[in-house]
Length: 175
Length: 99
Image (tube, rainbow over all chains, first blue to last red; front, side, top):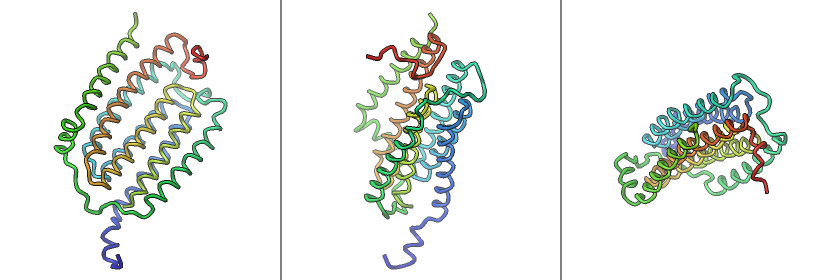
């Protein structure tokens, strides 16, 4: 593609700036989740990560998944986490005993994993552009998928959720 | 936008989550790290859905969100019961099933 116009049309400056800003916020927040010594702060940083992920889903033209992410994760899962924190920790504030004694071991493991995955991604997809005018996947199409070819996993998922609800009640009940 | 920028973001978040699972002792914090891992997988799936112009990735991502919600519910119920029995949720205290 020699023409400069093609290049400018595919560059999508605003989307790229948005991606970089949101990605930086997400990475910093995720690092805070795994390094902070306050459980409530970790939960609130996790909200930032999840909201950033929802924003990335919008950038990826997946509005329905983004809305579901906000409803399920930020709405329900975070309330569960905060309840779990409150019910298991009497103390609010910084704590010392949150990490394993050998927690430094995680740094080389994560760095090696990241190096391997980065090499794989860059060598496979190096400069490949996402389509600038993507085919928008409508909610009707997703529902056709769920209730068409993916109906059996949907049933299995329904039973998983039912089992999880009953299991959570049985486990958490005082008797 | 490049395909690889979303995949690299997913890789970075995945590795941060793996570090959290290895380094943390508190069970609630380990569950939070697992949530970061699941979200990085979702970013990858949606990037591939956009790249291939198909709705399959969206369906998988929705299923992953539902399974993650179920997992958090059961996981926190188990953490609650462990706390009720032992007054602690430090994972390396739970060594009764060690062979």
